[in-house]
Picture 1 (cartoon, rainbow, N blue to C red):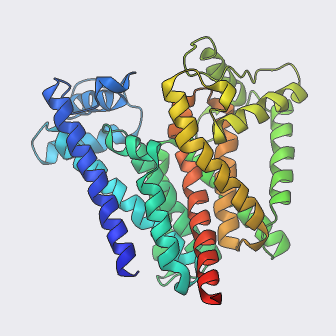
Picture 2: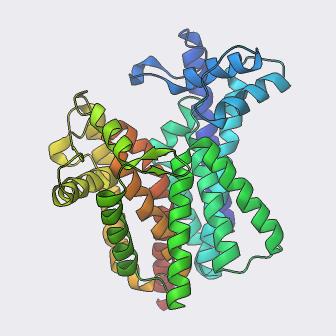
Picture 3: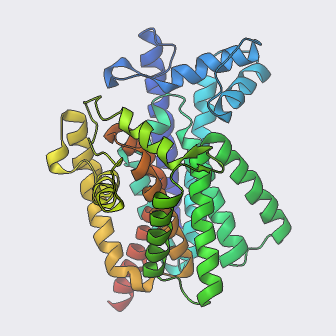
Length: 382
């Protein structure tokens, strides 16, 4: 990496660290233990994780929702403290891991001469991605580790099955298993999404031995989802332990909550109506909120700061899709599968802005690669 890219990484690190520290002291001085600030509204999952971590290390009954509780508790126990700042520093390391993995993936898919341009763009985009910035610094949420282990799993899969890596396959394989276990420990359906996308990539590569075609991917997913909806909607899915009907019922519970709900019901009497509403949910989770879905200041900010940028990136990538390498198609499939899954379960814009980061990270990496190489070629032609 050139010095400009290093400066971007340093700026990214300083930004995330300073924001986390500022929020900590503002929260602590306001009596909120150094966790989130009440000015952002809503509940604070970080408060829940902190309380359950303390109960865990004190041997009291606690509510287990993810491995995040055990890890936070172990950190507090090792250092013999209950200071929230230590846990914020732990999450900050997750942000550093995330940017490092994003750059490693970018390096795998980008030509060496254009890498510094693409890397600078990637770091700049991740530095100003509002939802990523807030969910990584606002409290001690688990999300940053979900993003990091998702990217690590993607990187190791590329090293093992698409591009030859420097490390022996045994080491990469062990690391991939570890990363997937951690990903499942933090969020089970993130692991399920990764496994589905990885399986589709392997199947298509075996069948065609050529670059993956997104039309084939769409066909496989459409047929698979239709069969599953019609015949197996009451069968529990491995990994997450829920059936399709369970997920639809969970989504239905939120329809009457108001606020930033999308108000899209997927519990339909036939598969045609299901697909009509499902497509609307998919677009809403991908770009949303759409202009007519804005219900207040928060949804308006999300639409302006994220939705417009994501629309531009999508249009740009669709124009470049024929130039995608196998690595880029794999990342694209990961994003597609993730959005297909969260569009079934999620009907809330606030939750969607947090969940969709997993799907947008690989797309932003692809965009940085494509745009950076385009800029390099134009400079070279001058």
